[in-house]
Image (cartoon, rainbow, N blue to C red; front, side):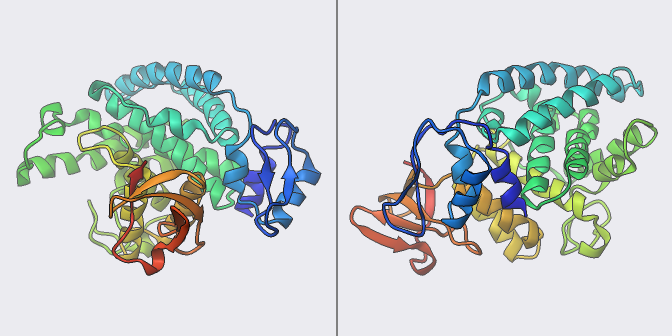
Length: 340
């Protein structure tokens, strides 16, 4: 269902490249420049064209999204500072503006390229919050959740880290290993966030619960309460994955990683019972589908082209190296290390 929803969003958009069948070799399905309609969607599905690949070939308007995103960042900074002072000024306006950006983001998934540009560390918490909100809503859409649930996920992600504003910035920007006392202080942001958000009437109760629980893991080794999967709402589990993904994809307090490295780590966490595989695998498949036919560098230093994404092992696709095909599921320990 999630794949169908993604495809439907390209109706009315113009193709920037030809699309060929994945069922019949060299069969041209749709020509560059054509405007997509419902009949075209059925054709793409019949020939097993990946939804994310089709989305990647439509003409987009990143400028309007970029402008909306930039203006939203300034608004988030102002409202978060108000919340820290226990004021509710500007929340209604922020929610309305954020809803508009979410709508744009869910229709134009090129937003991921915009939100993962390098940022100034002084803006990190604010930009991270917006990013996690957007990514969480996208995951909701991938999983086939309703529009209402996707927007709720967006709000949960937007406010999940507001408690970090109360943490000593010197600790957050420290490059050396944190002391046990410093680590415990950072963990307090979950309690602080819940306390700040709980009484705000414009927000769903899940928003404040997310601030408290977004560092819990399904194996019971997270914080602050060491909850296991059955005691962590599924929507909050989505936020945790979006939070983890964005943290690794941006130049935050750690080294920025490639999508390929991040997907490998997410799947390792799912296989280690830290993150929910029912969320991680569909999301990883979506991200990897966007990388189809791109040139990548392998861990053996060879250059390859991604040819096919496996449904259950999206991090280990079939690649073409020169004139040979290599299934990375069978080529351990070779993996994709980054873009070529």
